[in-house]
Length: 216
Image 1 (cartoon, rainbow, N blue to C red):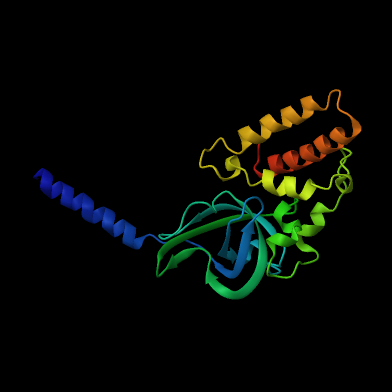
Image 2 (cartoon, one colour; image 1 turned 180 degrees about the horizontal axis):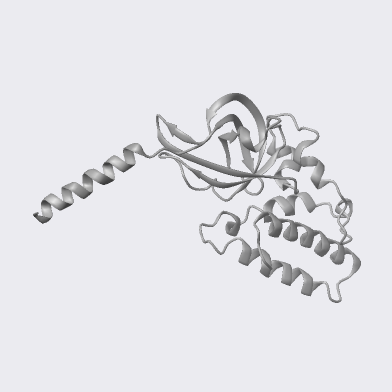
């Protein structure tokens, strides 16, 4: 048998396998989501299997895997929260007219920072409940947000810095861990005002460390 004939046989076999292969998935609910850090928002088909009682506004989850033939990138690996809930019936996994789709998410109950900021809901109404409830526990570190008038601006700006939107797989964790060490070191000999601000910065940094699964 000639090499060219063998190559044709192999090519046809691969083509047949690709045609016969199917991907198990499920029906989902179309939602508008936004990332817990940064400013990315998108429509997203949330698998109904992840929320048997129905996905709700304010739900927080991690997108472990998301791929279709048209879109694969910044959503994968991100923590997001639900801003609107639309109709059920979208394809959250399986074969569609666009090709094979994979979607895997992990529902979470930890604090999702952008969810607590009214500006991240604009022009939508700021909700009660959902992921906002997990961010209301006073920090144990001694941070008094009311005593630092610039807390919200600093927090929003810090979590939108370059490392949080970097394609480098070591980011933002390298940045977060280095800053946690810096903030901790600067507590030594700090006055009461600076101590409060550093504790608040540590709260934000530790929160982001958990969101991005960092090991600091």
